[in-house]
Image (cartoon, rainbow, N blue to C red; front, side, top):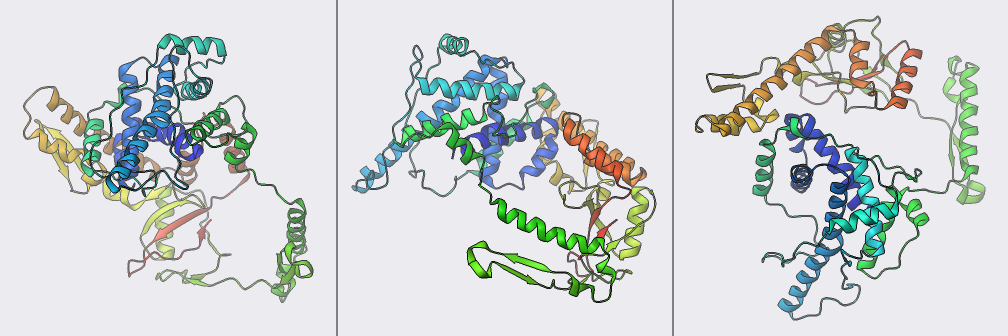
Length: 491
């Protein structure tokens, strides 16, 4: 629970969504629409919280402590008070005891600003230092110095008031009910934020084996605070590390057997058995189950490769998983697309690396965007076609407000939204033109090569690319019926 509800949300999801908004607001709002309402609300709320933290104070280690204390209050004190109140209301309204059987009445965590409880200090220590990493603030590892800073801040639990009247919520309810109006209100608040004024925030990448990154410390104290709420036995740090890291004992005997069988089949390839007559009879597939005793191992002939039909009018009517479409030479991306469309007989929708459909080297949607228009002249915005609003939804409100709001700061804000979107659109057009005119390998590298911040991944990417004289790509095309065509890989 601590890994999914606390670490994943606070240390990974929140900063990732915040950075997505900070770097590319239009792109953020576009991908936001693909989320469920609950996920949208959570993302917007967390981004707003990070922004408010910057607006209320300077981002230093004290701010990290305050952010950690806010989580401590919300997760282990306020939420418990809310839950107890709600369930007591159920008792009063139904006349039946609620806290019976497996329903254990929780107890909120303690707090004393002059003499903080040990468990609370452990939580603040781990969480504040996790936030220090996110904000690139120097860690405070000295326990005495940390304790002194916490006491000097005089942190107090916020005043609590009962949840608003209405449906009584419990932790057993399925999912969070979100008011769409609340989502739109949060979107409106973020539209008014200038991303240029926001500080960079780095998301954590969970690593169980680094004892200096505070990850396991955070999970351990979070787990035990949650356990204390429900009077459950505490868990040792080593147990938390195994559970959170999903460390599963492996049977070396099974691994060795599988590797040996695979190597036997590889040796057959080395000997050229696949080129001989009746090659399929010379290779074997194997099934091993050590739990079945004498029937632990079964050998059988592999099935012939399944033949798939492209349903396209091109020269590649059918293929198997072993076939490839080969395009020779170092050619431009534009020329590659022409050759593929000619050979396969369809209109290319997307082109992306094998096994990674999240990064597109080419998309047909960007071709349509070349004809899009976002202009602001004489205080009047011109947006064509209506599809533009699906990519930059904030423009709909901006266009409406420009026709109503007089000159002043508010109007300037809406004009800036239009100009920002126009700049983003021009950037998309320029990048698309540049990528299409460049060599395919250059376009591939520009989209796939890890950044300088990921030096090890970058080094590995460069080493692999240097050894290969080809690129492996996948393509998406539509049949005449508008269905996704089955296509072989592209080399």
